[in-house]
Each structure stands twice: as structure tokens, then as C-alpha cells.
Image 1 (tube, protein in one colour):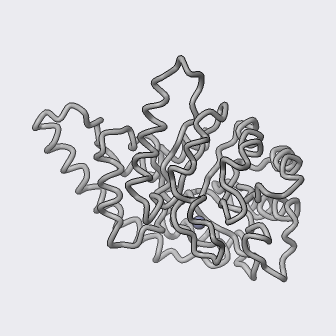
Image 2: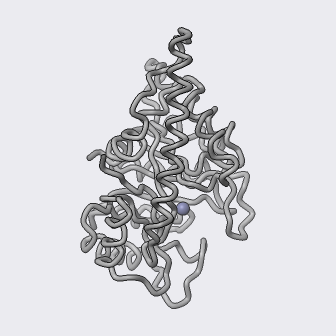
Length: 290
Ligand SMILES: [Zn+2]
């Protein structure tokens, strides 16, 4: 089975060269994944790094060109006045997707024009969701259901991260909402939501949150992908392996539970076999259209 790490950051500090990062990723069992550019300065400043949008785009393009299998994403600040030009520059440069953390100054709904511009490129958008660790007052913008206004952004394919911890139930409900809404074709097209289960959920919450996501009765299997939230600067294979093994064990438990439920004829559960193949591989490929 191919394993993709769908959530890797770049910090604006000293980094392993791409070849070393690539080697470390391969040694952890990961064959590819998603690499975000350095953060926008207002979200997190790195004084020794050129954090202008174009420089950050060029830097992640250059880095991933030397790490085959890893896709460059642009970490965008939707509040910047030239954001529409930045999105166009990113598309032309060959960026493969966008990463957004709604900080204290805006919610996704506030910048729906920029979200629509990203959707128009045909590229996916990965949003943070759940509590955020930097000192911005931003929780109200990162509750999963705060992303509900994305429903009618034409052509949008997006993910919400971290099972929305600590708002995991809100996350599952939002996932269900987007899935159910897609049945109502008479209202026009509905955005497609993916679940990015990259930790952010502390261990004690993880099994329960994953169980709820898969066993609530919606098609999480096809739209849930995995990542580590590590950094390219100093990627740790041991951490990737540990997360992979822990989550594989959680999935096995969910499959057992689903099987028992289907034997008891709980017809509302979708088929939940080979979850690992979907989580670590095929759902990420679908999200990234490869
Ligand atoms: Zn992250």
C-alpha cells in the first residue's frame, strides 16, 4: 500500500535540504504527500525568511521540485489586499493546492470571494479547523460549522483538518451536512468536503473521534485522508511510523464494529472495508485529482 502524508508544513527557519527530507519521508514508509509553503507573516512571523507571497510560492515550488511525489501548496492569507493576484500567480507557477488558516481577522465566509477564486483554479483548498495553537483570538472562525457558507462556492473541493478538535461532533455534523446537501441537485452544485484527520486531536480523543466520523453513517471512507502535521525542516520518520501504527489499529477496530453492525443488518452504514487503503492512499489521491 502506498502511504501519503497529506499535511506537512514548512517553517521559515533552517531546513534540511529537499533531498534529505525526501529520504527521511521514504524511510518512514511515506511515498508522497502535501507540502505547504511557509506561513504568511501575519499568521506567524519568521524574521529571517522572505515572507512575501510570491517568494513563499517560489520557495515551495523549488523545494518540492527536488522531492518527487510531494505536491506544493500555497499557504494563503485571504485578508491580503492582493490575494486574487496571489492566487493567479500561484496557479501559473504550478501550485497544486491552497492551505488556509482563518485567523482572528476573518472567517471563510468573510472572504468568500477569495475562496471562489481558489475554487475557480480547480485546485483543492485545505482549511485548518479546530482550536488553533498560535495566540490569535480565532476559535469562532475555526469551529467546523463556521465553514457551512462554503456550500455554494461553485466547483470547490476542500478539506477541514484535525477532526475539528475539540469540536469533533460539530465536525462530523458538518461533514454530514455537505454530504446530504449534495443530494439536492435542484439547488445547484454543492462544494465537496473532505476530512483531513491529521492529529490535532490529542490521543485520548482520537479513537472516539475517528469512530464517530466513520460510523455515523456517512461516506467518510471515500473522503477522509491522513497526514502528520510534521515539518519538512526536520521530518521525523519515527513519529510518522508511530502515528501510522496507532491509526491502523484504530481503523481495524472500526472495521470490526462496522462488520458486526452489518451482520445485525444496520442498513444505514456504508461499506467500511479496507479503510487503511482509503485513508492513507486513495482518498488523498482523489482530493488531489491524481
Ligand atoms: Zn497543520
